[in-house]
Length: 227
Image (cartoon, rainbow, N blue to C red; front, top):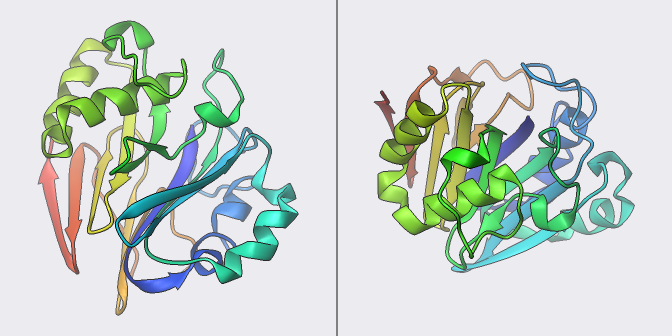
């Protein structure tokens, strides 16, 4: 499993979302509080953010807690839309940068928190890696984000053991699914956070029910039941 976070709102520093919160992704890389599968997320990390409408990425195949260069630069990086993740690799999957989210098609950034049998996924020449999450990302990109809910339901029917928490952003929209693991929302005055688990103890965090899709445009948050 993994932990991921998405932001849409005012321009903020990457550090304020990923490193500074008391239970942010850096802490979740070694001590997650709500993770159901696995004890830590030491198999890589990735931060994607939008420079206007252009997605940029910085990824590593080592634990986030040891990334001193990222720690030094993150306070200077700012964006209005962010997708960040720390990775716990599925057994048998490669531990390398290309297997680390967020994945991109040049327009969207996407992270997958979960596991899926690659045998139920159509082959894709555009996948960034042979890992399950990268192939799943390629399938989602090919079918389009408006079909995300239907795609998740279809894949879950083919693999009932799949856990399909997906988080994606295109600079003006956040879309996420809760399917098999935790997802929470924080509606701040300057934007919206979607995260695998709260990064602090703010009482305004809301848990997303399992098997739901979340769609954020501006400060409008819509939840839709799946399946």
